Length: 214
Image (cartoon, rainbow, N blue to C red; front, top):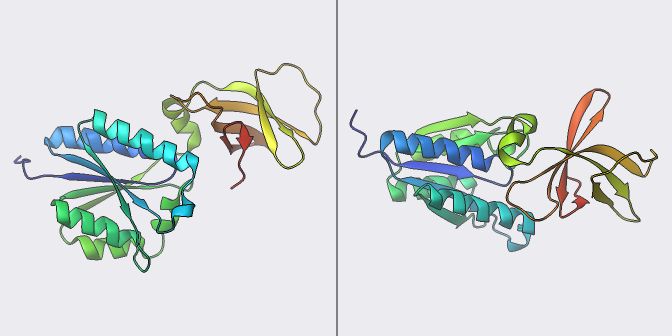
């Protein structure tokens, strides 16, 4: 197969699934001996950024560059859709294959419903579009987080704080027992807190030792 004209674009957005998508794009780029680019679309309003999102972006950039690719951040200006930004970048760079993810745990859940995919397909012409069904949190934890440890969330006046490495402790309305999975390559207590309710596992987002409610 003649692959020298192939070019791969991976689109990632806020959430833990970006790492998996970049891995998928890296493997495809290596197979096709094609250049790899990774794109994240920034919101038009600067205040929508936060520390956790910046940490994801930093990690994606490092992963992309280690794979020999180029990492890009492009702003979605007022009146434009993410599909516009992605298509513009793809056409400008001569991309032949685009990879996006579908997940109920990230903004791509919203984007890959409704008109987003149709909008993107209309704009990218003959470019191939791969929609990857990224796995749920339990199946991703071993690749993105450390091994789980016993922990609990303790309620203070305004929020819940994380306490790890706990033993026997009283149970009350102000204490939530569970398992904490710290993100890899971080010195902060940030990650996912697993709690089981009525036989169903629920994953709570922890940022620097505090439960951040979605």
